[in-house]
Length: 298
Image (cartoon, rainbow, N blue to C red):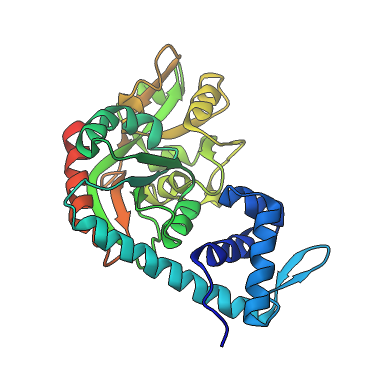
């Protein structure tokens, strides 16, 4: 019978399956390419099977596909094993790996980081800012512990813990015709050039869904990768956009010739800020308390 693979070998196996490139997989594991390649070769030799087809591109063999799935399960179980041990030390006694989306991070983190550092003491806080699908993937792989997210968004089978509503408001240049209105209707928006974040940002879909709009109903001249870019486009009369209230309160419009107007709808136009974690996580109570910290300092 083959000897058991090491955790390191399984980690490298999953990394190579994800990256399909030896150098990129090695970089993601913070090791040399030769170290990763040697570990994969030793794993294949020990198991007596070829896990990858090595050619101009790296492809998983059929048995490789199956064993990568099993390896992910083993690594997740080991992560839960460690979490249970850490949880026995009490709340906030372990390192925290927090994922957060770009439309929340610059506006909320400055308000809550000090309190989080005080709560976690000498433990490390690792923060990863990325798009929603990437963060969910990292959560599933056990690379992150909890996410600070905006809903609605399809989070799959993960547990969602709503914290508060973040209203969406209309941002337009000064002297814009809609600036004469105290509130702007959805019908008014269909006659305007709407600026949105590019695909992959959940705020894009949340803005459209909240206003019951379809992209085919709108003129969308440009797409941006950040809210600050959207604001600059508005200031330069390229179009109008929707901003989350937390960004406005964080002075994203400071020293700009832009102003905001509420939207006139039958229901509140907002997104729900929430914490997301793996179901059955032994740190669920800790994450709920983290939510209370966020609410106190937001």
